[in-house]
Amino acid sequence: MNGVLILLATMLQGQELETPRPELTLDYAFFKERVQPIFLAKRQGLARCFVCHDHRIPPLQPLTPGTSTWTEEQSRQNFIAWKQFVVPGKPDKSRMLLHPLAESAGGDQFHGGGKHWKSKSDPEWQILSAWVMGETLGGAK
Image 1 (tube, rainbow, N blue to C red):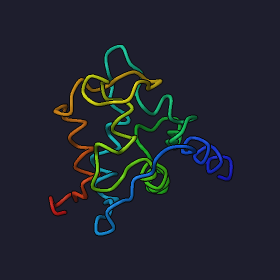
Image 2 (cartoon, rainbow, N blue to C red):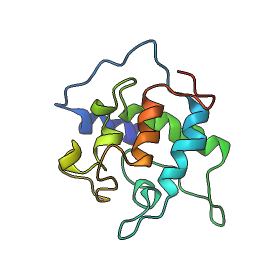
Image 3 (cartoon, rainbow, N blue to C red):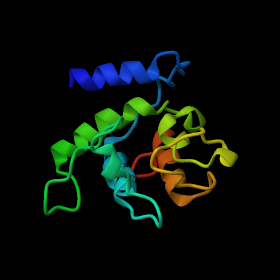
C-alpha cells in the first residue's frame, strides 16, 4: 500500500488540486452498482478498464479467477482507490472522467487505455458524473 501512496503522490506532484465540496460525499452503493460495471464493460477496439488498472494507478483489485465481478471487500478497496481521482461536485475537474474522455470534448491528452467516450453525453460518462455529483442509488444527492 505504501508503494501505491508513493505513486499517487508522484502522479499528483505539480498538479493543481481542487478543493472538494465538503457537503458532498461519494456514495459507495452507487459506485458498486453503477460505476464498477463500467470498469468491466467491453469496448470495440479498446481494452476493458480492469485489464490495465489491475496493475496501474488508480488500481482496481484483480478479479478472482472464475468470477465476473469483485467481492464486497474488493469493491470497498476499489472505492477507496478511485475516489481519490475525483473532485466531489466537479466532474470537469475529476481525472477519472477526463482521462478516458476525447480531448475534443474536454478530456486530457493521454489515456493509456484509449479514449472511451467521444462526448460528455455518453451514458457511461453520465453515470460517472452522477457519482461525482453525489448521486445515490435512490437518486438523492
